[in-house]
Image (cartoon, rainbow over all chains, first blue to last red):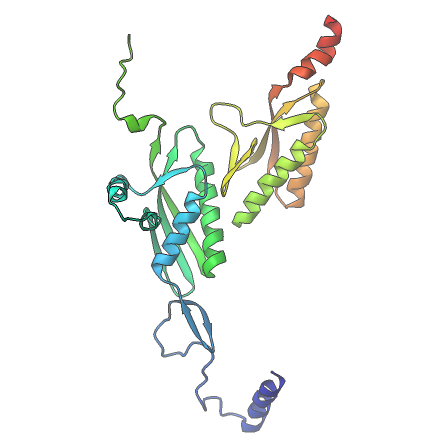
Length: 170
Length: 110
């Protein structure tokens, strides 16, 4: 460490104005294509795919108890169908309702969530937003610039039985 | 405004209010429960609003006023420690039965 820094110092002192001499390997090269990496070191770079960020965001949103389900109506129905197929795994549906955009150092997350009836929706979305930001930033190192949440539907308990079978009057 | 701030603040407020003398427990109460959602669960009886932090409590002694003052002071200390300028709102949701038996009403009756 000390030898390299002293070597760099002597190079800087000795050669004077030849800053554009040998190409440096450290740091992003100016002409190189933008790398989708949160971490670029002199020994290589780390790429984080969209699907990874989407899964982390989906799991982080589901950690909040106020989230009943995720995805738009059509996606939720397809997810129910898919879960009936033997051999399918829950992992496929983790990223349901999540769309992400991953840039070089930043990411933006859009979520479609369904909450329970009888809750403060603002409270739920605030909890989801802060947890998604914390998990994504903690696990990937990407900076989350925004988390947009669409509350698509609200789940009323007993809704699964379809139309109310009992008539309102006896 | 990180996630841990929010979760930590809700837990700290709940701890401060719950350990105030005279407060038997925090309750969600109401039609819309006063809870703060945290990963994997909820903090009961604490709602972090935009302008006020409301704490919903059940009280186990009379008179109510010194208990409420104690809660406001304890929660206010937590908020000022976290550089939070929101007001403190105390909602007395319930009174324990023991307070009714042994309090001023109980002594008068027996």
